[in-house]
Length: 314
Image (cartoon, rainbow, N blue to C red; front, top):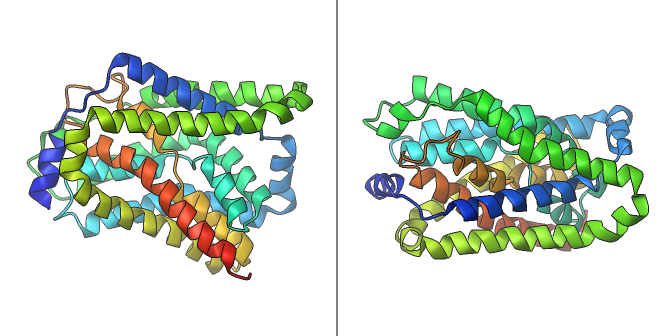
């Protein structure tokens, strides 16, 4: 397994500057669509019933990165630096917007889901760069010594990542919230079509990326499937378990599980393809394939578990 993943780390994926531009636009549209559902009342809810929101926030931005780091350290003999850093990047990203649909489908707390998505997306402007830099540095310092050029050369500038995340998340969020406040009737008409469009548009981009790099994905998908399967399972179960630890009800626990296990891997891809953050002459194959496959797998796993929960009586 380790040798196969080493070869994957060295793979150079085929993705043009035009493709990166379209991917950036897709993420901006997705974030704009998320922001159309953000209302001041969601933040007021934090003060009225803070416990579920605080538990969900901690689960997503503190427990998941910590568990991810623990998984990496536990299986370091079988994980290359590229795969490990890809897992850390996904864990550092905020929740994906599809989690709102999945929470409703699972008979979860839709209001809590939207509130968590709103708060996580806004705080991700700071916490995504911080978590990736912090745990990446920790892995380089205390992790296994590998004769791996990626670990030696991969030095991330957190300020540059902060600037990129601010542009990708901050500007669309401000525009979306402004539209929601100023034009509520128009917002109600366009938010569902925008959400559907952005979801299918992003999925289409991932499919195109897979098609352009078919040989790489077919060669390594078996191993990446196992890695992402385990990582995502831990994310979902840790979210549910952490909520139950604080004695939240089943409805809220389901929601926090999905918010923790559904990550905005599209943001991770945009960051990876940004030459100002990750030098494109480095072998980033492992990071890119982990992040891209997560974007597909978390929808499959999320739909599966939400459908199972939907059929169970709470």
